[in-house]
Image (tube, rainbow, N blue to C red; front, top):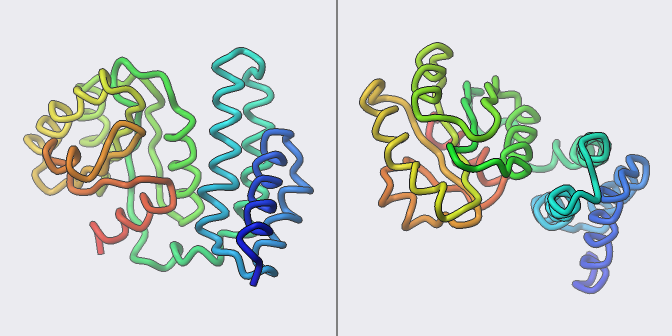
Length: 215
């Protein structure tokens, strides 16, 4: 079992490998996570996701562009493939269908992309609407795809205000659909107030919450 200091060192190195789009190193370090007895969930959240959050900052400051984003995502996926069988998300429940998007007025989609990757890794059918998605589009696409769950993401306190309206419109059309929300300004309390069925603080938790909702 790795010490806390050693654990942090490995997780920081995983972040650096994602930022440096180094697939081979990312794979090797994620193997070290398993060998050292480090919690794989923590490695995903603090290592891989932490690295991708730094990538998002580099993208927003125009130091990285779309090609770098894609290369970093490849490195993240390489590490995720090593950790995935140990995350206990694959057989948490029957696989479902998920519609996901970032609400209108918000163009931050790094977090949403991580959630999509985790659901795909767990074997779900995912319909990704991208960012800045209007209420009507969520409703139309949910009806068309007949998904079990709609996942709403917002990274700004201003954009998250659209969530209650989206949830209300979705439930009015299909009372049986489940709505999962997430994003930096959200909390369990806010999710309940908005009428969401579940709140997820990170991408791994999102898959587990979704599995519980349709289990």
